[in-house]
Length: 132
Image (cartoon, rainbow, N blue to C red; front, side, top):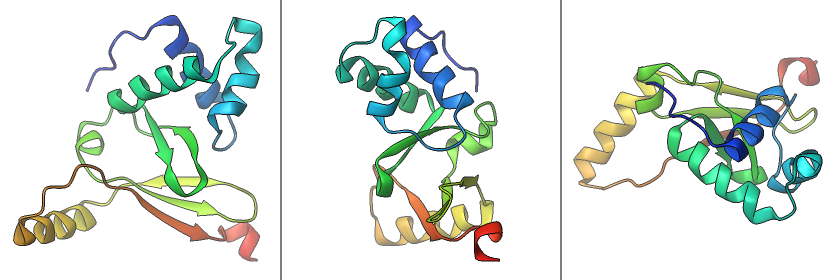
Protein backbone atom coordinates (compact mmCIF):
# COMPACT_ATOMS: atom_id res chain seq x y z
CA UNK A 1 0.00 0.00 0.00
CA UNK A 2 1.42 3.37 -0.92
CA UNK A 3 0.76 6.23 1.43
CA UNK A 4 -1.16 9.04 -0.27
CA UNK A 5 0.31 12.52 -0.48
CA UNK A 6 -0.26 14.12 2.92
CA UNK A 7 -1.28 17.72 3.47
CA UNK A 8 0.96 19.97 5.57
CA UNK A 9 -1.18 19.47 8.69
CA UNK A 10 -1.39 15.70 8.17
CA UNK A 11 2.39 15.53 7.75
CA UNK A 12 2.97 17.55 10.92
CA UNK A 13 0.58 15.38 12.97
CA UNK A 14 2.06 12.17 11.55
CA UNK A 15 5.61 13.39 12.27
CA UNK A 16 4.71 14.10 15.91
CA UNK A 17 3.24 10.60 16.29
CA UNK A 18 6.19 8.93 14.58
CA UNK A 19 8.65 10.65 16.93
CA UNK A 20 6.57 10.05 20.06
CA UNK A 21 7.76 7.48 22.57
CA UNK A 22 4.20 6.43 23.33
CA UNK A 23 0.58 7.12 22.45
CA UNK A 24 -0.57 10.74 22.35
CA UNK A 25 -3.95 12.35 22.85
CA UNK A 26 -5.21 14.85 20.29
CA UNK A 27 -4.70 17.65 22.83
CA UNK A 28 -1.08 16.62 23.43
CA UNK A 29 -0.54 16.67 19.66
CA UNK A 30 -2.14 20.14 19.54
CA UNK A 31 0.23 21.39 22.28
CA UNK A 32 3.24 20.08 20.35
CA UNK A 33 2.10 21.79 17.14
CA UNK A 34 1.12 25.24 18.45
CA UNK A 35 4.40 26.69 17.13
CA UNK A 36 3.44 25.36 13.67
CA UNK A 37 0.20 27.35 13.55
CA UNK A 38 -2.19 24.83 15.12
CA UNK A 39 -4.71 26.69 17.24
CA UNK A 40 -7.77 24.44 17.51
CA UNK A 41 -8.38 20.78 18.29
CA UNK A 42 -10.41 20.51 15.07
CA UNK A 43 -7.20 20.97 13.03
CA UNK A 44 -5.67 17.94 14.76
CA UNK A 45 -8.85 15.84 14.56
CA UNK A 46 -9.23 16.49 10.82
CA UNK A 47 -5.63 15.41 10.19
CA UNK A 48 -6.03 12.36 12.42
CA UNK A 49 -9.24 11.35 10.65
CA UNK A 50 -7.43 11.21 7.30
CA UNK A 51 -4.36 9.50 8.75
CA UNK A 52 -6.64 6.84 10.27
CA UNK A 53 -8.38 6.45 6.91
CA UNK A 54 -4.99 6.00 5.18
CA UNK A 55 -4.03 3.33 7.73
CA UNK A 56 -0.84 5.06 8.89
CA UNK A 57 -2.17 5.90 12.37
CA UNK A 58 -4.20 3.87 14.87
CA UNK A 59 -6.57 5.02 17.59
CA UNK A 60 -6.28 3.27 20.93
CA UNK A 61 -9.89 3.29 22.06
CA UNK A 62 -9.39 2.44 25.72
CA UNK A 63 -6.99 5.32 26.37
CA UNK A 64 -8.33 7.75 23.74
CA UNK A 65 -4.90 8.19 22.16
CA UNK A 66 -3.18 7.74 18.82
CA UNK A 67 -0.02 5.97 17.62
CA UNK A 68 1.75 5.83 14.28
CA UNK A 69 1.37 2.46 12.57
CA UNK A 70 4.37 0.20 13.18
CA UNK A 71 4.08 -1.26 9.64
CA UNK A 72 2.46 1.40 7.41
CA UNK A 73 3.65 -0.08 4.10
CA UNK A 74 2.82 -3.73 4.78
CA UNK A 75 -0.09 -4.77 2.52
CA UNK A 76 -1.26 -7.78 4.54
CA UNK A 77 -1.10 -5.69 7.69
CA UNK A 78 -3.26 -2.92 6.29
CA UNK A 79 -5.99 -5.40 5.38
CA UNK A 80 -5.83 -7.45 8.58
CA UNK A 81 -6.89 -7.02 12.15
CA UNK A 82 -4.41 -5.16 14.31
CA UNK A 83 -4.04 -5.76 18.02
CA UNK A 84 -2.28 -3.71 20.67
CA UNK A 85 -0.72 -4.64 24.01
CA UNK A 86 -0.76 -1.57 26.26
CA UNK A 87 1.33 -1.46 29.43
CA UNK A 88 -0.67 0.02 32.31
CA UNK A 89 2.52 1.06 34.10
CA UNK A 90 4.93 2.63 31.57
CA UNK A 91 2.47 3.27 28.72
CA UNK A 92 4.43 1.27 26.14
CA UNK A 93 2.29 0.13 23.20
CA UNK A 94 3.17 -2.92 21.16
CA UNK A 95 1.35 -3.40 17.85
CA UNK A 96 0.95 -6.87 16.42
CA UNK A 97 -0.81 -8.72 13.66
CA UNK A 98 -1.45 -12.45 13.55
CA UNK A 99 -2.92 -14.19 10.50
CA UNK A 100 -4.31 -17.04 12.60
CA UNK A 101 -6.28 -14.62 14.79
CA UNK A 102 -7.43 -12.83 11.62
CA UNK A 103 -8.69 -16.04 10.05
CA UNK A 104 -10.51 -17.23 13.18
CA UNK A 105 -12.25 -13.90 13.75
CA UNK A 106 -13.23 -13.56 10.10
CA UNK A 107 -14.56 -17.13 10.07
CA UNK A 108 -16.77 -16.31 13.06
CA UNK A 109 -17.95 -13.09 11.40
CA UNK A 110 -18.92 -14.97 8.23
CA UNK A 111 -20.64 -17.75 10.19
CA UNK A 112 -22.73 -15.15 12.05
CA UNK A 113 -23.41 -13.18 8.85
CA UNK A 114 -22.18 -10.19 10.79
CA UNK A 115 -21.02 -7.10 8.90
CA UNK A 116 -18.15 -5.53 10.88
CA UNK A 117 -17.42 -1.84 10.49
CA UNK A 118 -14.57 -1.52 12.93
CA UNK A 119 -12.35 -3.86 14.93
CA UNK A 120 -10.13 -2.87 17.81
CA UNK A 121 -8.28 -5.39 19.92
CA UNK A 122 -6.47 -4.04 22.96
CA UNK A 123 -4.81 -6.06 25.67
CA UNK A 124 -4.03 -4.06 28.81
CA UNK A 125 -1.59 -5.24 31.43
CA UNK A 126 2.11 -5.05 32.22
CA UNK A 127 4.99 -5.29 29.75
CA UNK A 128 7.87 -7.64 30.52
CA UNK A 129 9.99 -4.91 32.11
CA UNK A 130 7.20 -3.62 34.37
CA UNK A 131 6.04 -7.10 35.36
CA UNK A 132 9.53 -8.05 36.56
